[in-house]
Image (cartoon, rainbow, N blue to C red; front, side, top):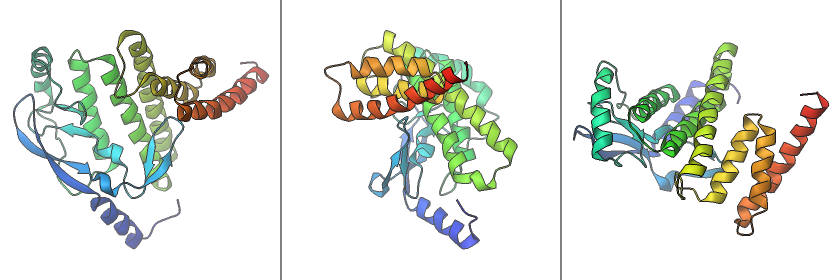
Length: 259
């Protein structure tokens, strides 16, 4: 990305703002009514995806807006999980969240910066640790947080110092590692669909995460298992075949370097 003029930057901001609207929510913990910015699905224009299924769109990164946080009590979750609540979870969250009360929850303005979005993800991750949610819920939240970190790297690369870029790369790896470990455990402990994914999709995602984490042998095992299935979706199988070629080359490089 080349250096942007003020006019070009302001144009991008306005285009992102035009993709958003304030959606109403009721907090399942404290019953507060509030609004949170959400992306209009009609404004999403796909520009492909990364090999680990991170979607890319023109004008707006919708993953920035997937976390909803109550501005009163601090309860936060991905929007798909926000209203999923049972009494035992509510009690655990109510007991643990008072420590959030002195922290600012950003909900104003017409858009979110990447830093503001990551702050909301921090609230969601902390709530995940307070309650006995399924491991897949925690894994999915870390996956999305890792994707937001990557989005910041993509969008703000020209404006970041080398040490900032390195810190973001470390944070993305940490999030993807937690997502990978959580999903692998969920495959053996939970029923499908898991985080809205069928078995083929989640198996492919885990193989792609293993590849990004340089766990090439694990990635190859998962891909081989996936491609051996007689019921695998043809589109998933095609993506798995392409990824397998990449992983095979990286395994060869590791062997050549004596790793």
